[in-house]
Length: 189
Image (cartoon, rainbow, N blue to C red):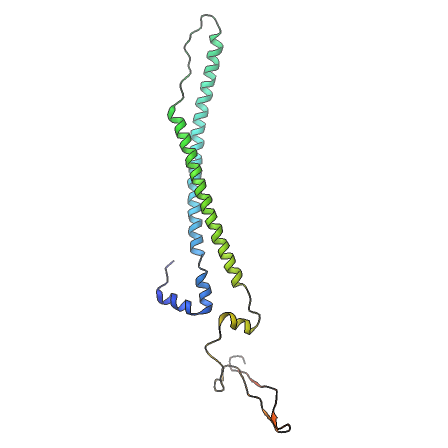
């Protein structure tokens, strides 16, 4: 989406109805947050897959070492047994790699939580602003109070807009009547 130029922004700020829409442009920000969160979730999925693979390798090596030590313990009780064992020392890098994977998962998870909090705050601001916009103008005076008076006011010579005429002279009472006549404009006919 393209950004608006300064002239368009100033025109929208001048109009009371368009100003409401200008202040509520949170959609692109929400979309960017959602895209970033999706990217982070994919990264978390890749980290979880790598951690699972490393843990499977670590568990496999530990279980094979455990079986080898159990066999050695049983055979060492016998007479004339060999003292050599098929037990291998655990790889020192393996523990470091698992620890790094766990830390990476924790970091990505905390980043996702922070991003989720920001997303929720933005959504709450949008809902709050939307609730302020949704207040309805049930009559014309509420409409004018909210959006301002129209620039084009009705006049005697403007036949397109409706116009309230002056009260008529009543010769019987020798005064003006209380009734006001409405001349309907061409727009409303």
